[in-house]
Length: 423
Image (cartoon, rainbow, N blue to C red):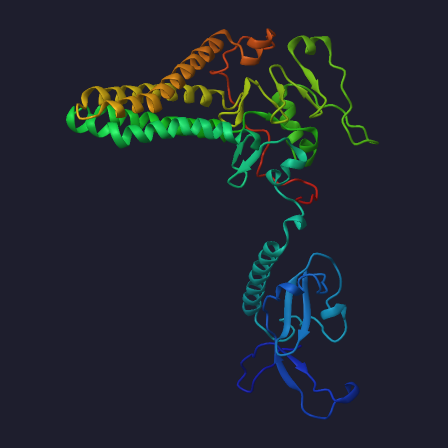
């Protein structure tokens, strides 16, 4: 490979001199021809069969294409296809051939850009199990519990077993609201000119949906397991600061944490050891049997929102209860105004309306009101639902609504620090 200089003094592009071979590799005496060097991405089937150079680039000779390159992952000499290392050499230094530094810089920059593009294309072609350092949400079922991730790890919800409970909750929110806006809202707006009622109902419906999604798709405060802490850089120190306790020592032979001997002072404060997650649980932290995770300031597992209710989504849960209560009142009042004011409605339709929409909505509203009042009382007393039901108060009496949410400790979009296959 060399750089040729024309008669007019201008530099030509690098070329590869290829001799025409005769029988048994002997030249037939014909003149050599110039094959241009073509830097093009290799076809996908050759990604795993090419030899790799020390610079991370594989060179190979192919008919009609000159030289191709592709990124590599191991070290070795620059060679041709099939691992041959003879017959091809790296081009000489640009300065030695008289090529200007600016031209060399432009060529190197173009080559590096092409190499980056091919590397990205190669990563997209690799199967999921071949990724070297996947993100946490991709291997959560190996390092975590039964929770599921949505939107590329940005949203977290509960196990799939709560699907029908969650659908039931959404149906009680959506269907009465659709009936109200499709049948009753127009009467209040046009006939009674009570336009604030439909507007307020729409705002309350919007807030109910938003807080429902926030409760369902927010990390409730999961305490990462020991395996996950060891796989993410800096997570062990962050968890230690969050729980206010030193991490347990690791057994070199079994690669498992040794059960620590908690002092009497830590036990009196509420610190416990979780045999499932292999972590020290701080006060008010409990292991959820449905999500199979330890949750900070665990209140309860709610299948209707398809998530645990804990330290990081307890405020959203109470806001959802408040919004759902107001929505139920607005829908019931709107249906009552429409049923009592529309004289053209037949009695049979009125009975069906009350039986199908009014009664279930009223029962739901009464249940939500009772639950909302219950949680307001618990917040004022500084207790969680589990503490109230079990009679054991491991907290300090601080309000669960006004307490700090704290950052999420699972870091779902961070990459693990060790190679791990995505199963």
